[in-house]
Length: 406
Ligand code: ADP
Ligand code: ASP
Ligand code: MG
Image 1: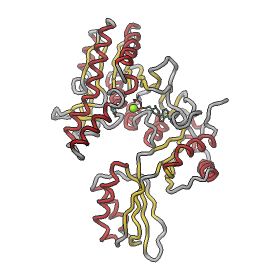
Image 2: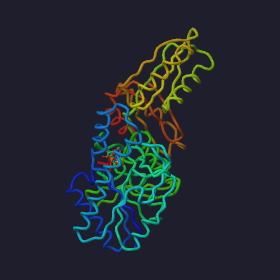
Image 3: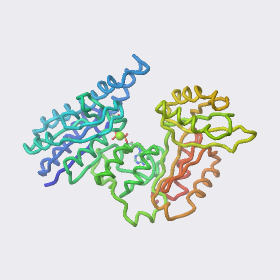
Image 4: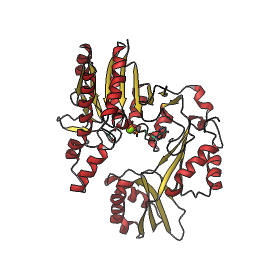
């Protein structure tokens, strides 16, 4: 007998047929005498649809009301999943995030989990119930409903697995595991048997939405080993765990593409101390998270400063910089929407050289221009033209020999 947490994402609960099918899978695990806690997402498309309705009525909806709205998606699924299990003769109880004891900070729409009081889940398990928890949501200290950021059901699952000390945490999704690249972009991407937390975290942060980055961060911190696998078949997935020495033999583990950022260029500003500080100060005040940054070598006392920000924050970033233009020597602010960030990730980069040269050669042979570059110990990212991004990902994947063996 083991204690198992299973998370089912949006496509795995997309309609009543899919819910019936996962209910059978859940019941099978329960019948094998396991304690089973299930975390579910909203049906695929529901969260986007709710956001669309909110924005239709109000371009900048109130964050508390937004959470009140978005939590509805997951609540539909917990109830339907419990009903499907009842129909199969299995005892199941649904719990909202708050009822499951998930306490968060007050930051509506991007709340962090502060603690989980698992008493309620434990009591239900003790009575041999299957517990169905709504992903993506919790409550703050005032009892207000909060949500955990897009893709946040992954975080709910990892945090619940940690709180109930699960023996196994399975993330069921619509692909068979973590691949060397998004299989929808790179058809010959290969499923990985295992991957380290750090690599998974970089891939997730760099745009691979197979796992939410914050969920991976949490798993690393609390050492929750988890498996990403398909809810559509029985094949084994990818184990995400602590790094082991042999992982360094592989230089590049995977390629990620992020199409969610835009490039902002502040042109023709004074090339003197304090200018960059002023720009990034005003952006921080506007709560814009800046990612890649490049300042060109100044000429004639003038310089250009370029950085990337989330697409949704582009207007806010532009306005914030325009306010301080006078103080930094005039100039203009331009936003380029048509960009993508391509990254290669691998812990082996710490001990191997030549990664940058292979990456840049692959891009140049395909005539893809590099606009910005940034590196970390286990990652190199470049900003390129959005229209060439998928093609570039395929070329880079090939150049690093990541494709399936024929
Ligand atoms: P869920 O609804 O189950 O949470 P998501 O749509 O959030 O599923 O994430 C799964 C998707 O992630 C896949 O359909 C795939 O297109 C995408 N993806 C991006 N990068 C990768 C990768 N490296 N490996 C596997 N899937 C990836
Ligand atoms: N339903 C939420 C979203 O679409 C959370 C999740 O699916 O993980 O972002
Ligand atoms: Mg997801």
